[in-house]
Image 1 (cartoon, rainbow, N blue to C red):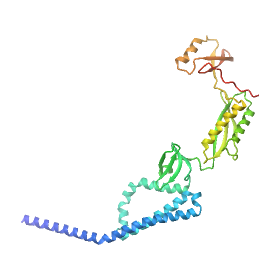
Image 2: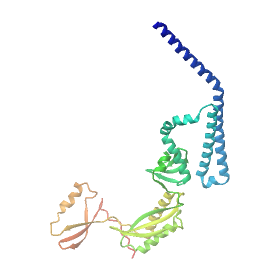
Image 3: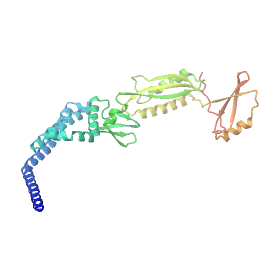
Image 4: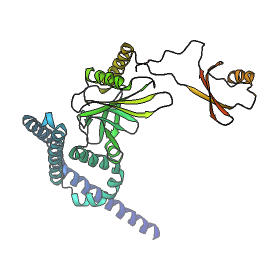
Length: 340
């Protein structure tokens, strides 16, 4: 009796399974045309989305937006593409008999968690294009990376670094981190520091510097360049030269040319920049151990093994100063220009 009952149960299970499989097969066969239609609709929506994107970008380009605001052209095309594609996919899934509400409810959490970074980068890319803190063609710095913006894609921004390498930066990183733009402002200021000997006629030296600034190719007349005396250095009067250049026309080359022109002008007018001078103070009441002074530099691996005394002046009671110059060889220092 038990065996008969088990056989009947197994037969019922097999019959039920077969009926379910048959029903599923009938459902699949019945829906195949709908799924094919849905696939065709989605495929067509991709093609139409691309056409819409190209059409929007071309319309914006005809109005001159491409030249002035390239990022707005990209944003308009991207929104057109996404809108048409979303509508097409929705229609295709509806034709295929797929309930979008169920799919969204079931997979929203998992998809959102899995695509968190992708969604953040996409939204950050839109904010970058809308905010226009930097645009295509700008020269920017992100962290330790410096380069020119060549592309702003939906997820990443492409930079061409100064050494020619291609750097891919996620848009979310650009949105969260500090970004320094060197070319958003049409003008960029370059600075060069020089030092003049204290015996130099400072007024003449400043006039020479200004003449070089105005004569260097790439230095703008407006905003005006300037020459400022900034400090009394240890062995020189420190001067800072400021020049404004076009931020998109090779400011590094302009700075290089400026330094070369300054060197040529200083040689032409006999303006010297002094060598570093060291002052050694010691107690005159204590015995001066010349042997120790001559041996210690070599022992400690110093640059020079010779100390030349140039002057001795009392600093205060029992204290005197000895001005000493340390050099690698025994050649005399370059002459200081006297322009009184």
